[in-house]
Structures are given as structure tokens and as C-alpha cells.
Length: 206
Image (cartoon, rainbow, N blue to C red; front, side, top):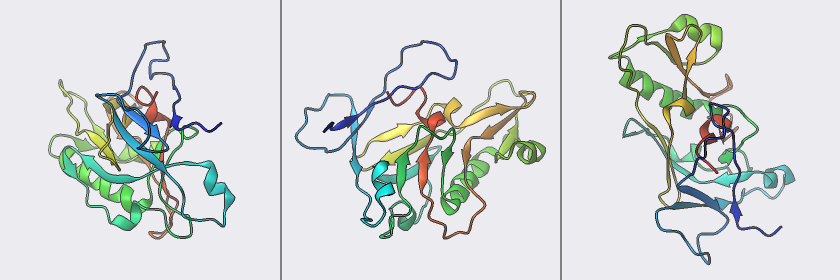
């Protein structure tokens, strides 16, 4: 189709027809196109591997940083770039519900949430066991719930600051909230890549 820009719409968390807009544009090239003031841009990138044609089917982005509550999570550079064999990197994946991170990156992000939240909320370990999500926190009796922002920063300076409902969800009896970013139980060197799932894109990428 020779299109240079990528756009799609996902239903809101309320499954209604509320119109939404996004200030993040994904595109093939950052040059040669007219840019709109007030929008931030990040280019797509190619997978370095030429041996596996399956890698060409994905929309790759260059993730530079993950920021939790205004603090940069110290992620080794090698976990943000696809390897020479094509494994790793970051893709837009609206076919997956949750955003997925490689285990070493997920551990660092989850630990930062725990560090910032454990001062005000207790861990809900039973909910973690039952739901498979982690970390989870008990918010019963709390009148005003405040959580750190989750921001993805991409090449070109574009930032994707997530609405709270895109990365935390009520679980069970509505007194527990859990992080809806997931990983696998694989080895630390398993380069399965990072997937920006449907929950991260809902009400954000359009």
C-alpha cells in the first residue's frame, strides 16, 4: 500500500463510542512529511535480521526509556534493542491484551512500582497468586488512591504516558488493584521482546 503512517482504533475501556484522540504519531520516516504542531513523532524501524521473514510482519519501535513515577528505570541498553538474530525489540501488538516485557525489564519495572507504592499500600499476595498478575496492592479503606505514572519514551523524544486504567486494574472484590504489565517465567536471557498490548493502546493510539 506504500503508506508511511500507521493508525488504528480500539474501543474504550467503557466499550462506548466516546471520541478520543492521541498526541503520538507512528510513522515510517521522520523526514519528508508535514508534521502537525502539538504532536510527537517516533519512526518505525526494521528488524536487523534478514533470515526470518516473520520478523518483517511486525511494527517495530525504538523504546529508549521506561519511566515510573517520574523516575527512569535503569534498563540495560541491550534489552531495548533487537539482537542481530532478530530477537528482542519493541513491537505494537494490538492482538495481545496485556503489555508484555522481557523478564529482566519487567522485574526492574515491577520493583520500581513496589518501591514507590509499598509506603502507602500493602501487597495483596493472595490476589497475585489467584490472578497471575503482580504486583497487586490492597486499597481497601483508602479514600484517594494515587499511583505513579507509567511512561514509555521512544526515539525522537515521543513520550507515551499511560492513563492509569491502561496499566492497573481492579481485581476480585474491587479492593485490590494489580499491574497489568506481564512477563513470562523464562530464563533471563530469553529475548522474546516487548509487546505494547491492547490495554496500553486503548484510548491512546488512534
